Length: 278
Image (tube, rainbow, N blue to C red):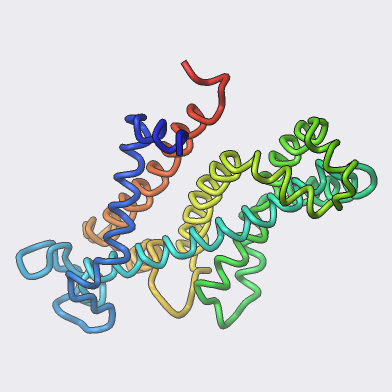
């Protein structure tokens, strides 16, 4: 509670939090205040923003505001799900590896290093391109999460290694607590703030990864995201036609989301890390 109050006193955290909550409000509650229709053709192709269509239309004459609201919700969903999967996987493996040590630590570290050597984006492209059908939002989030856990596992492992030498961990061992019990009850509570920051960064990374693979045509088949909007604008030459409204708003939304999350993370690190406090 004290940490939360300190966060709320940080101007950076408030700016990032307000921006991020605003994007969530648009993505989640936008359909309740604006008629979202991503199928019906409501005008001519690439109609500029005007009174009838606030953000114009795309190459098919579909309302761009509807596409952006729907796409924003989809991108946030992928970001959150990928963030949860990557954070949980990386945290559990990192904590267990750092506490247990021995051959288990060596094995997990070896696997982590192998994944770190291969660029995540390359793996995403290979896996997504191999899925000729059925690329849903959940599947995209699952793939991003399972290819992005490595750096968080490595960071959490370092934190876990420093904690395992504390007195309360030794006392738990003397009392006969098992490894799983010590990890869950004795170590994870001390890493709560660190895991929160990892989740923020993983969510931002998930949104960027989804936008990147969707922009090159390897995104979800069944819905619209901010990345697929950029892909449609690129494939249908919106830039050469001067239809800036077909891609600039989507780029702005992606930038605002990621900027807000990084600001939240930076302000949280300033509060949670005693060495960075003034």
